[in-house]
Amino acid sequence: TPLGVAVIGTGTMGADHVRRVDQVVSGARVAAVADPDEGRAKGLAAAIDGCAAHADPTAALDAPGVEAVLIASPGPAHEETLLAALDRGLPVLCEKPMTPDTAGALRVLDAEQRHGVRRIQVGYMRRYDTEYAQLKDVLTAGELGRTLLLHCRHRNVSVHSYFTEPMLINDSVAHEFDAARWLLDQEIAAVTVLRPTPSRLAAPGIGDPQLVVFETDAGVLVDVEIFATAGFGYQVQAEAVCERGTARIGDAHGLLTNTAGRWGGGIAQDYLARFADAYDREVQAWVDATRRGEVTGPSAWDGYAVAAACEAGVEAQRTGQRVAVDMINRPAFYS
Ligand code: INS
Image 1: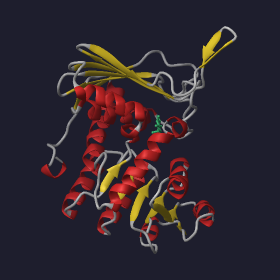
Image 2 (image 1 turned 180 degrees about the vertical axis):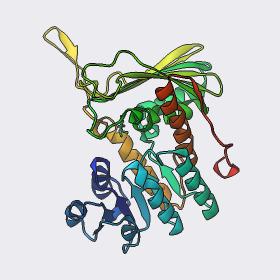
Image 3 (image 1 turned 30 degrees about the vertical axis):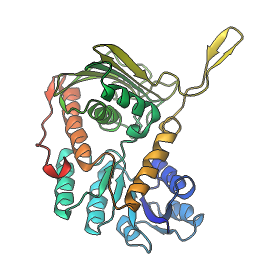
């Protein structure tokens, strides 16, 4: 029988996950949805057989047939639902950021360790993107030698009205923090943020773009251009510079045409389009692992490590200083 999933939060991401679990992923069904906007939850549930709708997340966890939880509510609401899921022994896929700060992330690590077995996967879906996986394979194979530098570009079309400057780090560069840790198998040691004169098209109060430079514990330098109001499209690129060559992803995603003296192609307009395959693979892998009784993918430890890098990043952004990342030692539970 298909795995009964409760989807908590039905905004842009949550609604897309409801569609994915319902129509794309095999071996799972949406057993419940929750959203503070109960009308919205009911609207989604109405189209799905045997799907309950609730305003309260814990009511959705307790709905009949729920065996696993996909959390897609806003970051500050994650901790409460994560702890409630652990209390019930339910496996979880939690969207990024796991928690908005390290204090919350540490409480989640404690709770999962007290629970005794890993239950939490965190939604850093770039690890499931074909191009990222290719880059990881190339770097791991070692033919290019050691990685020295990683150049990243992270461009969004525009920001929501509730976007704030720290969100450039917490919401956006969080992906590069996780991707760099994963690609290099290293932790982030220190973060510096540099700013040009902001774009005149940037949202009020947000110095956009910014250059976020971080150092890993093995001395790799990573630079990230974060440009949240780039306007023209959604673009994520990365180039590793190694001792014996370079490896680069994200240049062209999809069809390239030549016509009438010009060449070119389309550019995705948002992350749901650019990373559609990655999200599909991520959720399928989570469902498959859950049905085998396993937990794979980015862990709560990864969620914590990114939160620690984000904390340093936001302070670096505020002060203009180089800020060291303050982290606890990795518990054996997560090794
Ligand atoms: C979104 C999402 C996107 C990222 C955006 C962020 O929440 O995580 O992948 O590019 O910057 O605001």
